[in-house]
Image 1 (cartoon, rainbow, N blue to C red):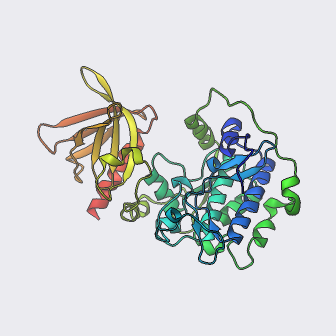
Image 2: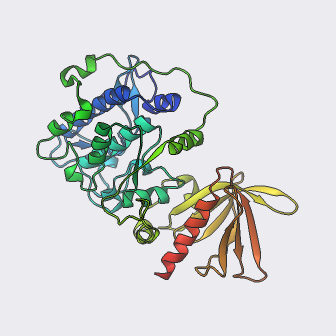
Length: 376
């Protein structure tokens, strides 16, 4: 598991440069990740942060795993781990939001199944160009994970869908590789048909993409992926509406549970109170009559709306919160412009924002979700 000679960069780079990987490329990389996880789990280590950014490519294109800062040893492991990795409680929330399994969000102890869930997310990202639960904030990502709001693009093969579906089972013991037969069932899955497991490290690796497309950024790739999204939804745990998605009432029921989750965005943690977490955050243009100023708007689970000067990193004040829509409401002009209106402290105040990421409706929905939760 040494990390020397990894001049090939990150697997994440390959996904970004190619937009998405072919199924043959994804199969090869996924097989090597399986090979790595089988070894780690055989010696009693749970990585807990498997993601494309932590999967490095050697000079000849093979996968090596990096970043063992979140590793969790099992009781019977022969491997010695530094004390700062073992002092935490077994159910401590670590990892990266988009790859965290639902049982971790529910404070369950770490298991080998955690890494297998992340494998499923990584395979989905290799094939589509985007992580399966990607959204505008960690809180919204967690909502989608808890609701298992999983949607497959139409171009996924049946074998790929089936494997990802099984790896993203809400029961960690049912994920291939976590059962009593170990990794045998995972390696025998039809998606891996043709893989020579004994000689995987001697197999010729896919040809890497050298140059990134300078005309595409992450948001453009997400938009392209969403435009190709099929109507297939898999959600075995939450009642679905006519379109197959979780109903808003079901999603809102998870807000109180998700509110206990700490935000990973430590840069803004100084502006929060102890135990408070970020629901939605974005750099916006605050539009005034005389001038326009950039502001970091933070919606928290308290709830409160905090305005921060992103250049000076100082608080510019809060927008007075109310659960009553007649006292606090959001009006959307278009996908980029929205207004937060408050009459909590007369006279009426109107805050006008422009969001370059075009998330105006997400701001409106997040604020109204929190207001509805306060009424429950």
